Image (tube, rainbow, N blue to C red; front, top):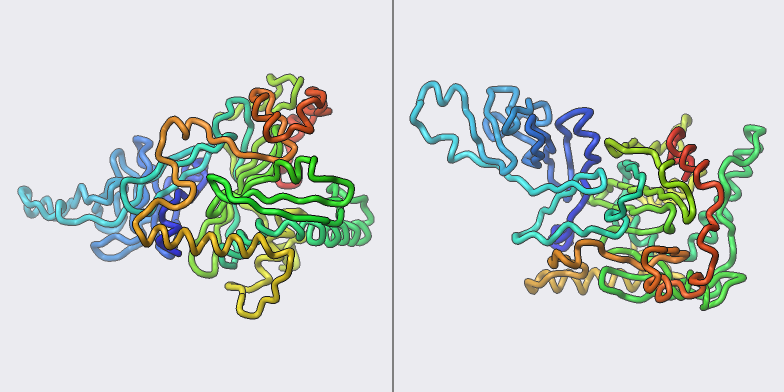
Length: 414
């Protein structure tokens, strides 16, 4: 599985984190690394420890062309090559010792206010440019949290449509009512409507799995079924609409920890004044709170409700004791897909969703329920025919919403 995960690009930081501090400790796929930005603006991802006397390079000094160890001044560039050894060069001016010293490094790229790395064999595939990254009228931000559980627990949740009805609907409403009773204040967040599921379905597509549902009051002609929404293999959930949504990346830290990066995007709705969209010189990030003041997991927001379900399964869920039912067909499909893709990698091939064509990577379209893609009418008719004839200027108060998002905590607004 580790070899499979190394065939994909993973986010490791928000770019703005390196504006706040130019070095960051990174643990990913069981490796301890340091991400840094030198004074020329070049980013590098290298081994966490200096090979000289094994001190932590996250305390190093970013110079014009690399990262200098604070202990004895050895300096390394973004390829991991040692480029300076001050005392050694003083004693042996013509020596070539530094040329023999090189530490592990991985390539990094930035997109959408996030830093990504690829840790697999060369040649590296392209960093996938999912469609929201290609929009030029989007206001976005990044939420980051480390979860004390295995990444697969997070991803299997995305193959489970029925949990929406119970975890976010029934239990979510219960949590909001309890909070309102406890505080004496009205419910602050509109809860998920707990409509009962009548049918669920799953299909493989070029980049992963599309999950579909029919709930009480809908039919197979509605977009929740006809279009569905995608889980991008192996570690991304894409949800939302033309106006607001998110890409959620579940990145393995090690066997029992996961970094969860949520890239939120907000756009002016059809007919809205796009000049009201807040200007972004940098894309903001924040560290998502996981526990409340009592030390309990926060249960009253949709993402947090998912966190509760994932974390309470334990560091690694004991799947040998599961009793699976009809609602778990997507989970079973995903587990089989993981086995299939591991076999492809073992055989030397590219796994599902590998992107190598620059033309394709200009903007990779993904199907999405309730999609109102005004700039792509043909795709709208294909993905969401029941919405093709809807009024286009039906997003109320978008200007007010954008102004609110610019000034309030976005995790609450979402």
